[in-house]
Every structure is written in structure tokens, then in C-alpha cells.
Image (cartoon, rainbow, N blue to C red; front, side):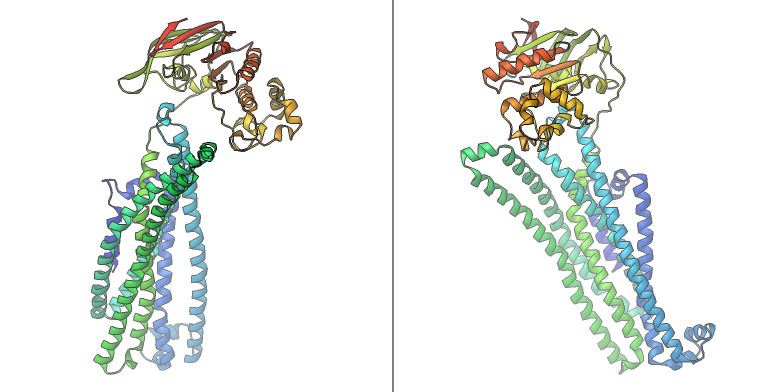
Amino acid sequence: MHAAAAHALELCMEHNNTSVIRKFSRLLSHRQKTEFVVLVILATLLALIETIGISAIMPFISIASNPGIVNEESIYRRIYTFLRFSDPNTFIIFFGFGIMAFYLFRAVYNVIYSYLLARYANSIFNDLSGRLFAVYLKQPYRTFLQQNASTLTNHIMGEANMSSTYLLSFLQIFPEAFTILLLYIIMLAANTRMTLILTAVLATSVAVIIRLITKINRRQGAIRSEANNKLYKTIGESFGNFKFITLRGNDADMLKRFNSINRQKTRTMIISTMMSTLPRCLIESFGFIVLIAVVVYIVWQYQSAQSVIPTISLYALSMYRILPALNRSMSSISALIYNQKAMDIVYEDLQLPVRKEGDEPVDFQRTIRADNISFSYVENKRILSRIGLTIHKGEKLAVVGESGGGKSTLIDLLIGLHTPDEGALYVDDVQITDKNIRAWRRRIGYIPQTIYLFDGTVAENISFGSEYDEARIEQILKLVRLWDMLQERDGIHTRVGDGGVQLSGGQKQRIGIARALYNEPDVLVLDEATSALDTETEAQIMQEIYQLSADKTLIVIAHRLSTIELCDRRIEIHHGELTPS
């Protein structure tokens, strides 16, 4: 039985030539590894406690059914004499109370161990999800653009949770396996022949069951992971395009798509649940059939069961504990196989290279200079080619050109979101590298075409992760001419709704400008920031921006000439090359 369980565990640990032990070693911190070892030790003690609890029943029944045994030469007599008892009945009562006290201790130990196990698994989930989030946030911008946000969200919240369940299942196997092993040894000592027969029957059934569920659960786990990604993507697409879906009236199509994927995921969960139940049904059936057969054999062999009641009791109690332990082991192994794909995903994503960025100071007093920079998203397909550009501090620069010509990519290079494939970026003749990139970015105020507003207050959307300064927020709101409007509502605590649905386009854009100005940047960048507004609102907001950036360097990407008419200089990007204009 124990060999079959070990074989099952070995089967579920085979994957891509990278052992589970190696993955655990890389996924877990030093402290978590220490806690893991402690839990394994506690699991071993739990198995020992379970074994003592079962094995103590047989001698108690022996003494209770035959008190005179304490007067015969045996281990019972030695204990009886050592404890200085004079009456067998008193000894039986003492023995009984001792067993009851032990079982209370066993119950308390089980509860404490379960709590520690659950706490450990949840701490692993918190750690893995946090580390995944950190890895994704530290990805190079070019890499991040190639990712699907819904898939990353699923990995953080879904796959990390399933990975902690994987680890929990792994830990749950230990006490069950040790309990089975210890009880098995006791059964061997009691009756070697019958125990070997029992082993042959149960080991065969376990081996058959494992081979049945391994392939099925591994495939269902992969399907579940893929379905989860599709579900997150469908939900994100639907909520992100809510207005469009409402106008087109194709909500039924989106719902049909969602339900189809959800049914696929549900099927995998149903099959997994069934696979976890199957071992219990089959093993219990085989186990108790064999147990009854043992009793029949003993009666047939000895013509009476009276003389072997302790042995029968031992087998009954051992099987009563072994079969559930074996079932739970099979369920844990089933969960390991089902959740293995999730752990592989988390493991692989945590190995992703991250950009190590420093915070060495950058002083911007004179110029920003792009020195023959080239860039491509895909190898051998350049977006920008040998761009040379100098921007003086306080200058108002307009960048124009056809769509897809590389305007936004050039801006992303200038503000440090991308790293040039060739050439370099200099600020006051100091090259911008990974050592000082964070300091340079903090000098940038960025206003995109689409302002992302989350479902929070105006103040929260403006500070957006920076240190909250109510006086600064009030000052900025007055500068962008939103203060008076907000006084008619709840002031800076006015909620904007998801995506800013409770605000007009001009108001959302002003909040975007306020967010960009909040940290007092030296450089203000507008990436087609007003193209979605009507001409009158755009003219008004651009006039305000020029006033607000009087002492700042301003870089503007725009299609409308009216947007850039107050700029000092204009350059044109054509097919990835710079054309002075």
C-alpha cells in the first residue's frame, strides 16, 4: 500500500525534466522552506499520535476482556507492577481514562496542525501572488505590451491560488503516508501472512486507480488553466467595451461565449471531483471486502473468533484508519496532478527576467538628447532608425507624422519607457541607463490620449499611488479649473465611477492633466491627449496646458495643427526617420 502511494506521488512529480523539489526550492523563500520542514516534522508526529491511538485499543480490549492477563507473564504485568496497582479493575479504569485523555490530546493536536497547514498555504498564496505582481510590474515596457492583461490577472489571482493548493495537497500526503506506514508495520507484526494478502489486493487496486486518474486529471488541469485565461479575457473585454456592446446589442453573443467557456471549466472541475471520489469508493469497497474475508478466514482457521478478538480488533481499527488515510492520500495526489499546470505557470512566470532599475540622481538643467537611437518591437523590423534629436529645457516641441510612423515610440524612448536597441539617451550629457532611469522618469508628467480613471475619488485618481497631499491636490485642481465644479458635488472626494463614467470628456482630461502635474515634473508630455475632444474643448484645454507648462519642457504629439500652433518647434517622423519641419 505504501509502495503504491509512493509510486503515485512519483508519477505526479514527473514534468518537463524539472522536478517538483527543484521548483519548490526556487519558489519558496528560506523561511518558507524552514516552515515546510517544521510542518513535515509535525506531520510525522501526527502520524505517530494516530498510530498510538489505534494501537492502544488492542491492549485495552485484551485487558478488559481478560483482566487476569495482568497476573500472567507479559508486558501488561510489568506495567501493572511498575505502576503499583493492586486491583486489575482499577488498572483497567486507569488505562481507559488514559486513552480518553490521549484522544482529547489527539483532537487538539489535529486542530492545531490543520490551522498551521491552512495558514502556511494561504501565506504561500499571498507571497506567490505578490511576487507575480512584482515581476509583471518590473517587466520591460516592450515585453508588457505583448502580454494580455486578463491572462496576467488570472495568473496572479487564480494560478497562484491553485499553486498554494498544490503545495497544501503535497503537505497533506505526509501524515497520511506515515500513518499508513506505521499501522502497516503493526499489522505485519500481528499477522504477516494476512497483511501481505491485504497489501497485494489494495496495492493492485491503488495502482489501477492511479493510472486511471493521472492522465485524466493532468489533461483536465491544463484545460482548466486555459479556460480560466479565456474567462478573464472575456470578462475584461465585455466590461471594457460595455458601451459598444450595449449599442450593438450583442450582449447575448458575449454571454453565449462566456457560458461556453465556463461550462468547459466546470466540466474539468466535475471530472476532477469525480476522480477524487473514485478512489474512496473503490478502495473502501476492496478494503472492507478483504477485512470481512480476514474475519471469515480466522473463524475458518481457528473455528472460533473468541481467541483472536484482539487481532480482529487491531485489523478493524487499523483498516478503519488506513482506508480514510489512503483515500485522502489519493485525493491529495489527484489534486496535485490537477493543479500541476498552475504551479508550472507560476514557476515559469517567476523565472521571467526583470529589469533592475536604479535611482541615481539625474539633473536636468540644459538638454535632452537622443543620440542616433534605433528601436524595434520585432527583430529586423525597425520602428525608428538612427534618430538624432536635442530638446532644450523650457522648449515647447511638437511631434507630428502619419499614424504608425513612430511618434509615440519616440516619446516612450525619450521618457525612459523603452531602451534603445542602438544609440543612447542623454540628459545634460549624462547617459540614461538602468542605474538612473527611475530618477529620470520621476521628472516626467505624462498625459495619454485615453485617461484611465478607476472607481475612486477625484483625489485618489490624482495622487494615484503617490503620497497623498490634500493641499497639493486642491492647488492642482484649481490650476486645471476643476475646483469650482467639484464644490457643487463632494469636493475632492467626488467619486468618478469606473472609467470616469460620471465625468465629461473634458473633465476626465483635466484630471489626467492634474495627475501629470501632481509630482511637479520638469517635462510634460502630451501623447495625442486632446484628440478625442471637440475642437472648442481641445482649444480651451491646450491653452490651459501652455499656461501651466510655462516653466516646463513641453513635448506634444498631435494631428491637428491648431493643437501645436503655440509650440516653439515642430519635427516630423516619417517611416521611422526624423524630418525637421
